[in-house]
Image (cartoon, rainbow, N blue to C red; front, side):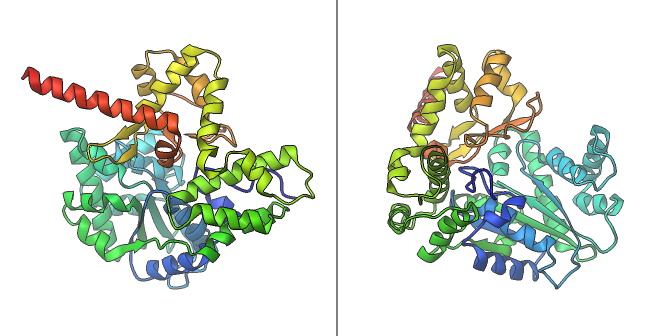
Length: 413
């Protein structure tokens, strides 16, 4: 019998949750076909369109299952996000995939040095790895748009970003070794690709633009996990959910969050023989209010005003509204958050822990990961910045403060 909640909420579906991942079968088949013809694939879509889930819970399990017959059935998979130090992140991803013996800091540093030597560094790292002969290596660079924000933060970071992209492009061009590159990227950052030599051309050639789910596919995404969980959903609730989500891809994570909350409410307040129904949906605030209610619920449960003030500082630190109005994640190591918020480590840990248990995945990593100085703290999805009203206000306040500061600096000059 299934235990737990079959809906992940705001975070993406993971590799081992492919049995809960419904409605994308046609898109997974298309990705497999594309990957059979190219070494460089850019999975592009609007925020909330399910890019990470499609690759992690859709494509990768199929590769491990040997579905792609045009190449070896053996796959080693490394997953990373570029952040502010893409070369180190790449080295860590390769080492943590057990390609270089023990997982330790020394191997990370050695691999990073190899990657840094030339534009062929990733190919050289493959040569030096313990990967079995004939095995494919797939590198997934998730949230690729992070590279554009960090490029703007300084000369050294910009140079490293350029070198990282050169590594990807040179690796994708060669055919001697079976190395495949997949990016996931928000479509509103496509124009930023022109900042890097050769990137726009590669993305144009290897782009897979995620199509919107049709109504039947959205229905499968709702009904499938409910059935896996051993429950039923009333026809009227299914129709209401489909009507509420409409055609907006940004609503998909909001739908997943509402379904997660509704499942928990149903589990705790209803007879398990009863189908999920409108009463349960109304109780959690529907899609329009469920996320704001949930975020505020955690906020109000914090021990005191000091913790609530730190909560505001935390979310302001790890989110950002750019000059063009785009809301973006701003993942930071815990040590930097601790410094920004005044070295109140224990209180900050209390705040972070309040927002990351199962069922409350507003902040990543999840509760199973111990927080230390180098751990990256991030929001689980950009939709938080658009739908949780309290955070939306904080993000706007921070953007207004930044604009005022810039104007004051310009006036002083």
